[in-house]
Length: 151
Image (cartoon, rainbow, N blue to C red; front, side, top):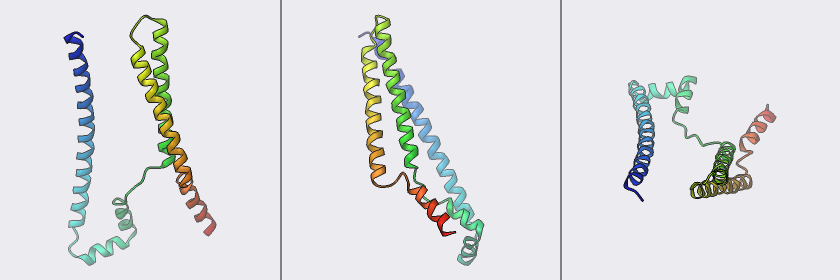
């Protein structure tokens, strides 16, 4: 292998690492700013009774919702996995098609991307089956139907 090819591959990996670092750093700074803003709001209250009275109001309830832990929707995760898997499968198939059309070294990336796409689809299928088994996919719909029945 030539030195320039090794340097090119190293530069590409470094670029991806830098992009990931920027995204993670942005998210961390955003979460830190939000936490500081919430802390400043809580510090404005002079006593525990003032804070308790505020939290008893509708605005206080909405403020408390900011601190609630939100879980990702299992159906959305399954759909995203299917989309990602299908895209990877089609990109891998395109590499393998390029191998048939042109005389090039498309076999390695084609097989790797195709195998990755099939692996993602298999993992998504397993996630879907587990989500159905534990009744996670219909939990929101069950809650909505319970609320409408109680009215």
